[in-house]
Structures are given as structure tokens and as C-alpha cells.
Image: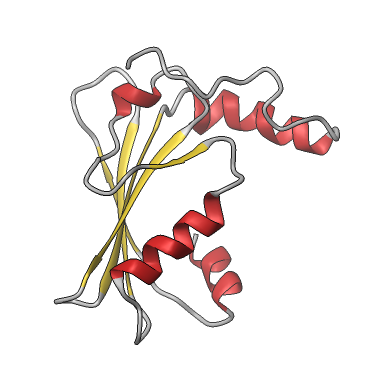
Length: 132
């Protein structure tokens, strides 16, 4: 994670990653936070995430105030993401939810295979979870 983020940023970055285990049959809820560069605002951060994920079929950047839930991605290859900026600590906080048996394993493998074979990356995969 740090290697890829550092490559994207063009400099070494540090990230704190906190997966949360809860009494549920499947799913991963993760919280990541990183120090923001000077000048970052909640608005600029949100705009950057909206631009980065606008065309990603399996990424659901949730509306402000709505938080990821593993039940909502259960059975799908989608990831739900929420991003926030803590101005008091100058930290970026990202919370995500995936179904670890779909997006985390088999679905991720099918998505990668689709891309490797030149197929549409969504072939054979669903973006709709089994829970509302």
C-alpha cells in the first residue's frame, strides 16, 4: 500500500491502516488515515476522490454523512468509501467496506482476469449487494 501510494504521490508517504473485525460472517471494514499536505481542505479532498473514482465501476464514493457498511456490499465486487478531513489534526481519514469473499478474493481475481484478457472488467461480476 505504501509503495503504491508513494509512487502515485511522487514522494514517500506514511499511512495508518486499521482493519476492523466484528462478529459478522463476512466483510472487512477498514479505516486508513494519513497526514495531509499543506493546503488540503475538506472540499479539495472530496473533489479529488470524486475525480479519481468517477469512472470506476466497482467503487462507490458515498455521499457526505453516509458511512460504509459491510451489509451493503455483501455478495458484490464493490467497495464503499467515505473520505473525511480532520482540520484539527491535518489528517485524511478514509473508511471502506468490502465483501472479503467477493471483492477480497474471487471477485478481485475475476476482475484482474477480465482486464488481462482484454474483457470489460465488470464481466461476470455484480456491483449490487444482497442487502439494501
